[in-house]
Length: 66
Image (cartoon, rainbow, N blue to C red):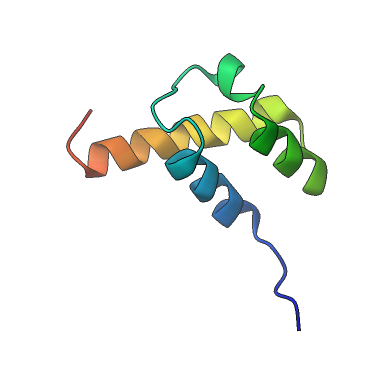
């Protein structure tokens, strides 16, 4: 059985692995991983990018970098 991908897991993966220091949502929206997730989950790349940037802020805060 193939597990159904979860949007939150995809956003977390991008936040942690694809240009993880980038915090500009306009730039993040151009990443191929963001475009792929947008297509898979029927969302706009800008929406996915905003979620990735938010997740990165949470990660940074948890690591004491904010």
